Image (cartoon, rainbow, N blue to C red; front, side, top):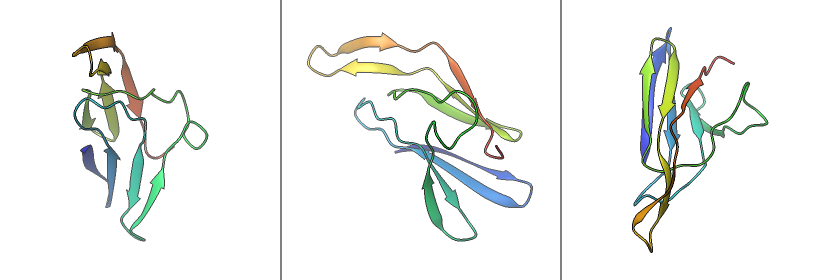
Length: 95
C-alpha cells in the first residue's frame, strides 16, 4: 500500500492508493478523520482529469495539494514495463 498524508488547515486528510508487486490498480481513497469513513475517489466525484491506474508511481504533498508522478503498467510474465507514464497529476482534496 502506498499513500500520502497531509494536514490541510486543521483537518488531516489521508489519501491511499493500493499497489503491490507492480500490480496496476486504479483505486484511490480518502479518509474523513471526523467520521473515520473511507470515500473512494473516482472520475465521477473528483474535479478535473482523473489519473489512470498505475504501479511504481510516487505521490507527495506540497502545500495543500497532492502530486502523483510517473509509474506505468508492468508485465509480470515478461518482467518489463509495457508502458511508462511520464505525467504529473495534481489533486486538490478541497475540490
